[in-house]
Length: 400
Image (cartoon, rainbow, N blue to C red; front, side, top):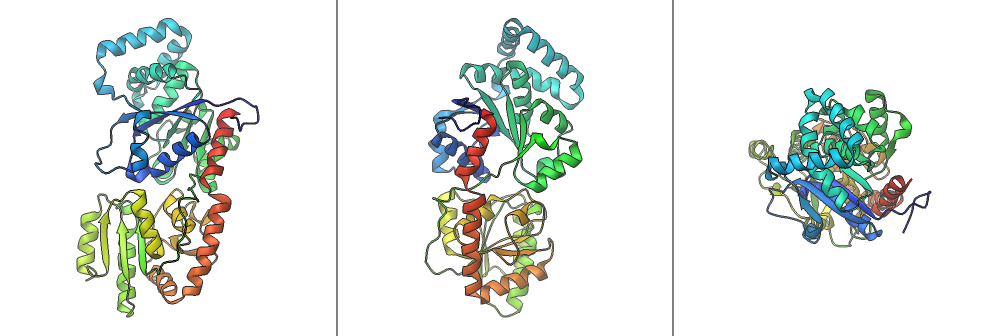
């Protein structure tokens, strides 16, 4: 089946990823599953196996599609043979890629070139017509660029935001885009940033949201009493400001229960802050959860709070809104493209527990406003952040 304007049918796509699957990157898993539902065969090439013991059941069903090709597991002799293979079968492409890599030796491109033949051979073998990767700064994206140069198979990548655009973009960001068919990003805010910061032509930047499955994330009618946050326990997620806001809410005499879902480097500091503020009985850190478990939390949630300092465009907000959960988020990066202040949620300044507490208090006291925010949030996601619609845009891009 073809969705592209040219009529060219996309049959096989290779996903090149650093680690697959990961609990914190369910959006990649869902994107791949939706591609498969659209009749596209996906072969996943992962550089490493996940360290997490807990995995989404949906990811386990894709196990047969994942090829783990760790560079450390391939012998030097095998790599040498693969380099010889490409030198003989595609001499011009091989020499151009080699010379390109030599010029970029300082940023690790030459080392990546030595490894990339492993993936190039396998991606050719499965008959891939396109290569896609996630995160501009990932090693997998650099490999995708080099594999594309070696094989002539076009590639794209998705740049997400805080990490790979704003904070730690790769030195060769512009070059990765130049060699790609296009760069995909998740918000108009990101698009403007990529254009201005890296001088990438606007026509080469495509805004395609990650999106959520609105047939899976659906509301229910049970009583809701929970303040919920779903995020990695990392300083950039601003969870300490949620704890401080809850402390203010408690001092105002309001009763509440809060659950924070996620794991990460900030856990010890957050637990210490909970203890210092006397909130151990109000706030619980429950660790990382699979998607089915998170859905149950959405169904119990009176609101979802995401007090991030910087972001891309959080899928967590989309999931909650699809479940008609009112949301409170910060006015940073691409979030205002999803959350409209006073329409389907509240937007507050980052690092401002006082304003965060005010928004939480309003929703705790106003069930009618919660209902209205929930209805509007669901409509917004169905209209603009539906996973099926976003994946069709990806297919159209790849087939064009």
